[in-house]
Length: 111
Length: 120
Image (tube, rainbow over all chains, first blue to last red; front, side, top):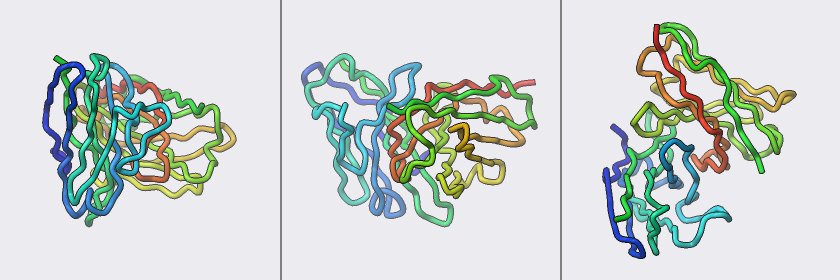
């Protein structure tokens, strides 16, 4: 069980907006950058957001990230059927056992 | 564009050592600010960070795997490697190598992944 909590699934209709939450703690999200990944079946994850809210140049601005306190959020607007995938948040976890951690993942269904 | 490719055995016996190599093309692994990383994903499950190695040779590993992990860099071949000892069924997973921008788990380039099954 991950120290980062994501909802197992979310769904929305094409064209709508969806948000995916990533809940952590003072030991991880509050003091570290958060990244977000999209993974379609059988493929490697793809970086969507890094350093909380920065997008790689090839990622459309329909994808945005934010962070507040011990939680982070990925927002996707103008949903497309191609957005249906698993989404993961990631950050550092800084305690006696420091290391990188991923959230458990969220399955996005575009209805 | 940097590309990464994992290679190694797809089947490892229990208690043996899993060894994988990641070959990087399109840029040197000696580049500043890039952390060369391993991530794995058991079938049907989520992602797990294994660790990274920097061009200086410094490393950082998942505490739960630290006692069994070894990584190395070969700048002459532009490769980095992972060794995981004393494997069990729980180590069966798709193993990915990836490039981390700045060591903040910002993996901007990934290999395609290699399925490693632990079985006798």
